[in-house]
Length: 497
Image 1 (tube, rainbow, N blue to C red):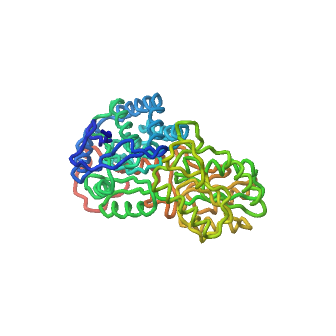
Image 2 (image 1 turned 45 degrees about the vertical axis):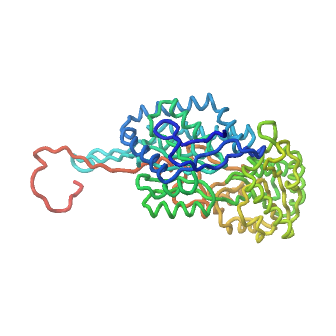
């Protein structure tokens, strides 16, 4: 009998009232490894109520005690992160080294949240008026929801829940139904770290669960990462229900390569950024913009490196694993078909890859496409797979216009040895995260993550100080301790005296 991944509620696994499930596959074999429970509305309400019930006691728990639990979680995660990496590889397909890197980057936010006492400090002004003091405090929101995508089942939730919990909120995490087990593993780790029951909960499911989180009045905020159409829906639905929402959407990230760039280092970066995690990441470089006469040489160097990549089972020493599902693999391949039909040049064709893995695995090798025009679907759409398109332009200005005209504004990079060009680029580019000779400019946890334009709905980014502000509300207190000199009737407007 196939095991079912359940929900986590009030400190323990919870089967739920419904028997609806969905299959979870091992992408390297194509075989169904487990089932995942799909919550009904009643199941979702039960989990949300558990988070609401735990909030009052958790918000009143001292910051010192909350921090101790954060540190304990960090130590347990550091000691056992290889277990989590293996779960990610088994359900998502990315190679073990990449999965371990994902966990490590998520852990950076846990470590950042361990400093929450400093981050929650308010301000104090003595004698703002005579014998009147004014001070500010930050308080938690209540139960909060996190809706995370399949591509980073550990890191993306960790962008949010360490800060939310450290600030005194309770959490309901809705992971992707494609790879749900990482969330349950982290829930057990929180319990092992001493987190009280009900503070961290996991709600498995599909759109039914998402819609209840978006509309249930107990949930005070929603953090979402996923495709732009769903991000737009999450933002509109959640804000209409009166919630704070940060909805991080899709991307079409460009790397501009100027003629003075080191082409060997740039080619390395293009391969790493284009094909890491099988291209299933919102910060992947999917468009290389070659400026001027370097295009032929650059494409040749990228192609030579791409041919050395070994595609196969993530547990067996491959460089790149499969895509997450067969449907997604076929969708990505269809973009390669379309690019070929539109007249682009398929330099490296991942559709014909011979992978080191199961015959029924969801394989698509690294694919390099040259002579791509901006009106082709392989350029306009977010493909979310190992497909790197090369667009050729004649000048820096043409390259800048191309990037700034794009509907997405998540991440971008420039490769150059010209400091003036780099400084001009960081000033003029209309993108939220910028790399200068860095292909994937994901910021450290003490900075905030998020894009511009159709890559972000809402005006608050993830983690960093913006994350702390998202999961707390500011309150200003004006205080005066009365004595007889303050008596009398005075109907005029209070004055600062």
